[in-house]
Length: 112
Image (cartoon, rainbow, N blue to C red; front, side, top):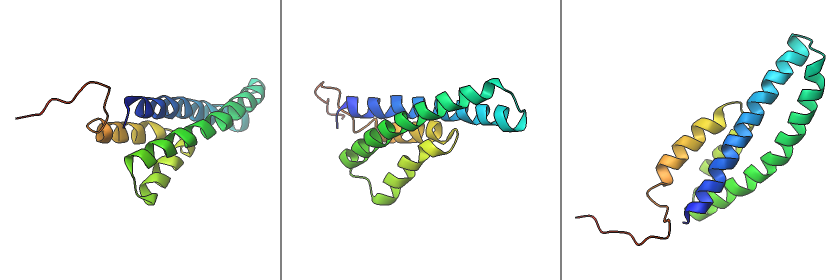
């Protein structure tokens, strides 16, 4: 598996995670604190998160298919973008797991 596949997933996991946390904060401001400015903020962030979550799904599915994950694990990673902060933890775990499998174009050196 190429390093770019993992990198695309990692970037989208962070973007999706940050937008979801921002959306959660915006919703708290809008409904719990009744802030007027939170209305426009939540609208913009929710649209951005929605479109970028679709990219996250595509990149996560691509990563999972190339890593030959079972369906249960694939669904777990795909749904991580819907729970605030989950994308950060799942991304870290997946990255650690796959770093050994990633090739960055350099020939591998046999370990003695």
